[in-house]
Amino acid sequence: MLYPELPLVAFTVLAQTAVGGYIITAGRLSQLGSAAKHRQPLVLSMVVL
Image 1 (cartoon, rainbow, N blue to C red):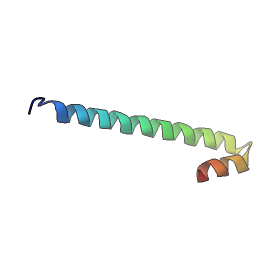
Image 2: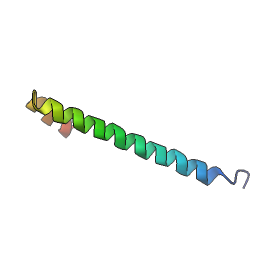
Image 3: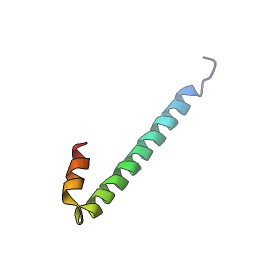
Image 4: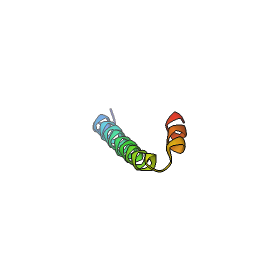
């Protein structure tokens, strides 16, 4: 192989993407939770989408 570190780089990128996606999802869930106190129908429609 030309780049023996390529699998490690790919794994690192995947791990960062997974962590970033988890953080974004957690942030959305907390936003939805706080919004649920004010706008219940909007929250439900966002969850469906």
